[in-house]
Length: 102
Image (cartoon, rainbow, N blue to C red; front, side, top):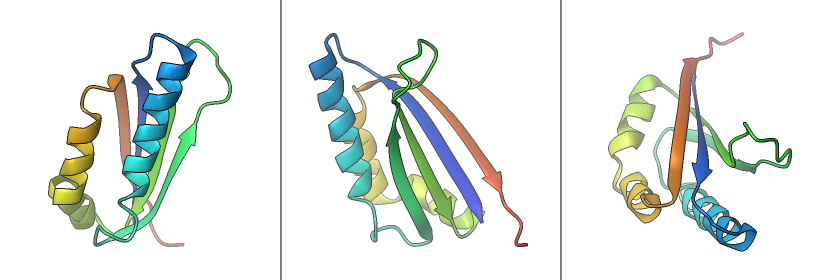
């Protein structure tokens, strides 16, 4: 299994503008559930710490294999979400790692 974790800081001059951006990102990624072959789990977390070095949002997802993650990167639904959200982010961080069966 491959775990794919992405964290973003989003645009927003006010708390309301940032909250709208977070909600749009959340809805967009949640729309991928059940549409991407090999995507086993997907969740979106919104930071509650409000510390200055925290990211605003995290995507935690699990894929059955590296091939499934690679296919996700080019899947039309994922590309749609990337296009919808292109102007929202000001920073992005990513970690992918393999988990061996126990």
